[in-house]
Length: 141
Image (cartoon, rainbow, N blue to C red; front, side):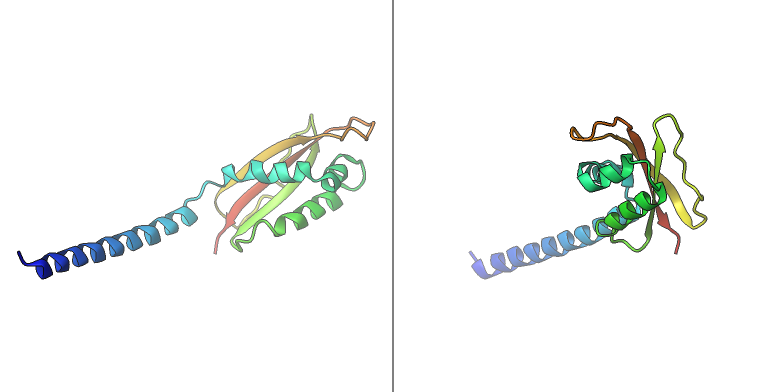
């Protein structure tokens, strides 16, 4: 009954397990960032925009849609911090087709898109819903 030999085997086994877990964690993090499906994130970001009363009012009002898109894009800068990701917002009427203009020439792979209808709150008597479409892509580089 040699307890020292048994303890060395246990220590070596634990050391090997720690190294394997560290290697698995590092390799899985690389996969998540490279092949990530951003279509899961887009509806969450659109929900945040729709719940912000100021942004919602800008979307449904009839004044300058380019200014509204710019203020929405500014609010998204804090949420999208990856420098390789580019995005664009388009605001359209419900019967229009929202498309990405201009089409990005630096898109590396897929362009993910999601849309949501935004309407007035209870206090606003006008019912002029708009459609907001959010495009997200990974820039090559």
